[in-house]
Image (cartoon, rainbow, N blue to C red; front, side, top):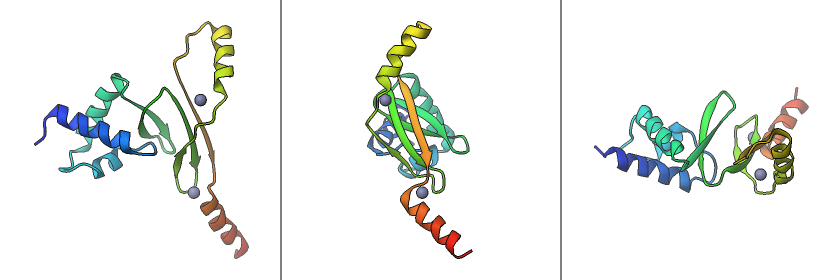
Amino acid sequence: MKSLSEIRESVLRVVERSDTPINVRTIADHLAPRPNLSTIYRALDHLEKRELVQSVAFFDGTRFYYAGGRDAHFILCGECHEIRKFEQCTAHTIRENLEREFDYHLTGHVLYFRGVCADCRMVLDKKARFR
Ligand SMILES: [Zn+2]
Ligand SMILES: [Zn+2]
């Protein structure tokens, strides 16, 4: 049995290595021996409080975890639930305006677009054609 801090460390490594936000079940799949989900939730809770990981809920409310900066940008496919990251962002202009308007000091943002990816569009087009 691994110690709590070892589990936290391996959970953090899995989140850091993932190219896309990752949910608890997928994190568990990457860990051997596989800890139970509540242990992972507790580790994530700890890491999130220390701002080593952040999380966002997509789709049916499933929480996804990611490491790195306070600003996060995602593009999601509503059909296959693929999640990809993107970098380009012009939110700093909006942020300055919001800080002025609401007198807030803003520390981060999450921006995501949902839609349908190319593969799913192809499948949907075929279905529509043969209906
Ligand atoms: Zn898709
Ligand atoms: Zn941004």
